[in-house]
Length: 214
Ligand code: AMP
Image 1 (cartoon, protein in one colour):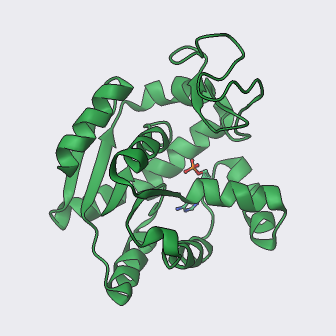
Image 2: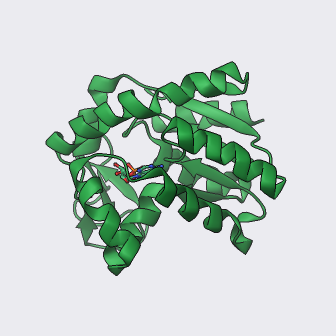
């Protein structure tokens, strides 16, 4: 099964993609996670992407399209995947169509997570993850049961994304509106777009997604 989650930064795509991985035995393909791994490894690709990511802008289409195309060819993607954070521009969406046609693949669901933009700044600036297992938390909405200790693995170190500060979040939301929102219409016009209410609680959103996926 091949799924795509659409929505602005903070909509909960990553959180929900992790839950869908477990539920459907498919893997999350987050272009943001891939780029952060490249930045941490100090690769050439990471060096090219770092500054743009820190400013809240979008990395070049060519770089992203090549990265995702070779990722999809790997063995662990053959059972299926959830696209999270890709495509983010109309040229990326068009390139994905070509890529899928060449690979004889088909998208099963394109799901928009509808959210209220203003709430995204608070969601994003408060989020952090366990450095050991990657479990996600939030200063206000999802604290660990014991302060400073990960519920899932007992880890005591947590990290925050460099671009999750109030100023960069505004640029990321702007980039979403200018460059990514148009692809919602792209998929709507193709008649394949479905929507869920991303403002609902985390469990409720998962439930809605499972209903749409069937
Ligand atoms: P994310 O983790 O999806 O919020 O992505 C973090 C950052 O990585 C974004 O603000 C962009 O700078 C970059 N990025 C991730 N995915 C893409 C993409 N599909 N196209 C361009 N830039 C991307």
